Image (cartoon, rainbow, N blue to C red; front, side, top):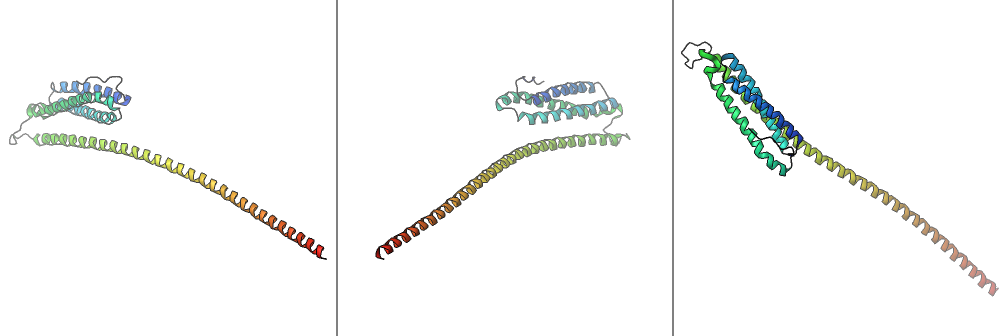
Amino acid sequence: MANPLDTDAGSELFSSYESELKLVQADLNQKLDQITELSGEPRKSAVRLAERSLEDANELLDQMRIEKQNIPSTTRSRINPRFRNYETDIDAAKRKLKSLSDDRRALFGNRYSDNPNSGDEQLEQRQQLLSGTDRLDRSSQRLRDSQRVANETEDIGRGTLADLQLQRETIQHTRQTMLESEGYVDRSVKTLRGMARRMATNRIITVAIITVLVILIIAVVYSKFK
């Protein structure tokens, strides 16, 4: 059985999944022990219950595997061996459950026979049941794979949204800078226009002064020669 995770391991969510996994493991092991003591319909019911517990354990392992990526690498190095122990425990339970499920004589009672010529009318139904169990296992595995892919896609989506948010903030900052720059340009244009008007006014005043002086000079000269 895997060792408990240290309290300083990192993710509270990972620890929560681990605690739940321990409970599921204990329940699964108890059900596996009960199966060995049963036969017939009670054994089949116990096998189905154990299969559901195994599915729950695998789902928790998938969640822990995803959450483990969010834990700092220094802490993750201590978690990895323990996580592998959990995987080993679940794989061993899965093999044991498969072995118990394959024990058809115990599963179906003393009426079981592998001989197709024995006249057992329920043989085909038993084979269909076992085939259905295998299909259910495969479907459950596909669902777990789909869930894992969906979780990975969700992580990628969150990263993409974060990048888009950063780009949006950058664009807004650039736009704000451009608006401020436009304000500076408008003020500069107004200042230049004011300077141009003052220069024009000064030029007119200068021309008027020169004109007055010329007129005065002409008047003085004319008065001397008169």
